[in-house]
Each structure stands twice: as C-alpha cells, then as structure tokens.
Length: 258
Image 1 (tube, rainbow, N blue to C red):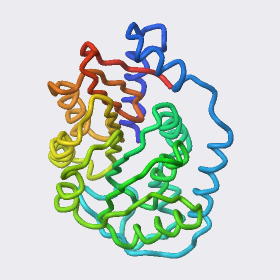
Image 2 (image 1 turned 180 degrees about the horizontal axis):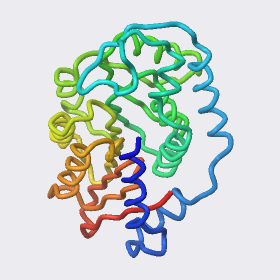
Image 3 (image 1 turned 120 degrees about the horizontal axis):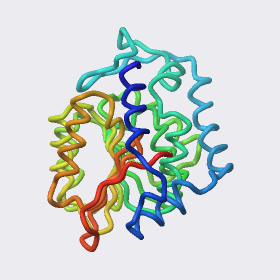
C-alpha cells in the first residue's frame, strides 16, 4: 500500500489536466468525458450491482491464476469480502463507465470477469454493447452470471478457462472496439495477451489496462506497451492505462489527473 501511495505522489507531480493537452482528440476526451460531471444514474446502477455482491454471504473456493491475491491467505473466500477488497472501486467503476458511455463501443472483450463488477460497469456505460468476458475460475464466473441475470444484462457471454487457451480462440476472426485487460498481472502474460489481441485491431480500437502501477513488473510492461509501433496515443490515468491506435494521430503519451 505504501509503495502505491508513493507511486501516486510521483504520478501527481508529473501529470496535468486539460491545459497540458494539445491534441484535439485527447483534449475533447479529457474535457467531455473524464472531466464531465458524473452521471448519478450510472452510479446508482453500479452501487446496486455491488450491493448485491456485498450482501451475498456465501463462500466459494477460488482457483487462482498468475501471481494470485496479496489480500487473501486461502482460496476459500466469502463473496462479500471478494467484492469489498478485490472488486473494482467505485471511482474506477465511474471512470470506466464514463469512458464506455463516451466512445460507445459495441463489441467488447474483457480479460478477467471475477465477480462481474467491472463487466457491469462496462454494460452500464453502453447497454447495447455485446461483451465477451474471460474468466479462469468457474466458481467466480457462476456468481458473475447470477449478477448479470439479476440485473437483466443481456449480451454478456462468459468464457471459462485458462486465458492461454481461451484467448486465442476468442480473438480468432473477431474484431473488438474495446478490450479491457484485467487478467494475470505479470509482464509475460500481459504482453502475451497484448500480442494475441493485435489481430483484432481496427483504427478505432480502444484498449484499457488495469493496475499499471500494481508492481514494478506492471510499470515495465506499461512502458513497453507505450513503445509498441502500432500504439499511437496513450493516456495514463494512474488507475488505468488507455491505448489508442489511430493512425492519423501523432505518437504522444499523456498523464492526466482525474
């Protein structure tokens, strides 16, 4: 926790607001999305989803992939505690929903369903979207499906299994407007996912990477992603790293306080 606070202090010292942005595309995104007043109705819908999980006192056995959790000592965990400790925060959910509402992507891929809170944030932002969400753990995917059914979220398909097997099959012959990466937080795995998903690119594709300051390894991974020749513009919000592939844009990287 202390290291994350230090990273945030460093980020604040190097970041800017809309006045430090000279790209019209990014300036419009910052002023009309990131700095626009939050939608109270979206927030209520998300809190309704989160409360459904927080009120669920059942316990499940979680199958871990990658590094695993730094908060839980065993794989047997209560749903309410997972939602409280490991689920997306209210602030991050609001930012994610606003980004989806602003760009309105229709074909979305998510790596890392967990209990379905991030998926819900995405669906709330654009109810017309069709979402494929990958999850390694069968037990957490069951809880997520219950959440989606209860909230009447149509067009959400959960694919269960190891990402190394499910991701190549999912991206084959598919194009996605938006991809949200919240899977195994290791350098190798994240870069492998990045490479797999390159086949889905369009000029308008938007990718978001979660937890880019989670570890030195993830910071290094984010740095490598920014340097990739297909990447043109990135926006570092500290909470998320946003990647654009617009060929008409000059290669630029922004750190924006939100």
